Length: 195
Image 1: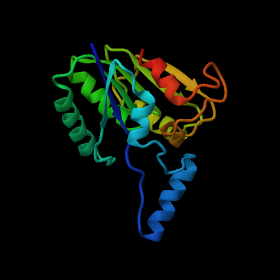
Image 2: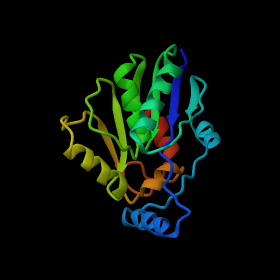
Image 3: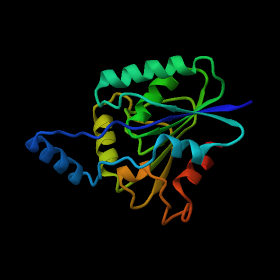
Image 4: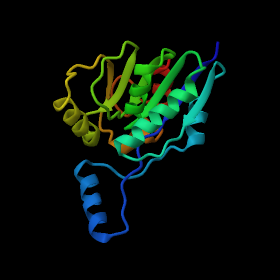
């Protein structure tokens, strides 16, 4: 049986044509050590993750930060996967919240792998793997903020911590320089996590 792999990108980076707001946005990104650029394109994700036993779907959504956009994307993805079996989701950044919303309602989602995932705490009954970095200040700040204001305080998940990786690095097929996965590319790590 072919498994279905859904790839969910993160939110769009903020930008503005007004100089004052652009300066504030750049200060925000500098504070959180983020370069506002997504490296991987749809074709690259598919190329790196394509295997014989997989059906790959790159789920495109508006990429807006607002709750309505995430809710809408979650509903659209639920509709997309309703007749699929053995669905595994790779989610980047805010795309992880979409994956969690869908997994709460769909019985056919069997695993979530989030990369620099930004999401509210959850207690899913399916395997969930978080690939994170202590130097991803952006992701860590927002996840701690969500945790502080959440009723659910513990999330059941396996965590893989990588060193010296910024938030935007998770959107590139970087080579891991230290730790257990040293010398492996991010795509190799993702393929390992999807097993």
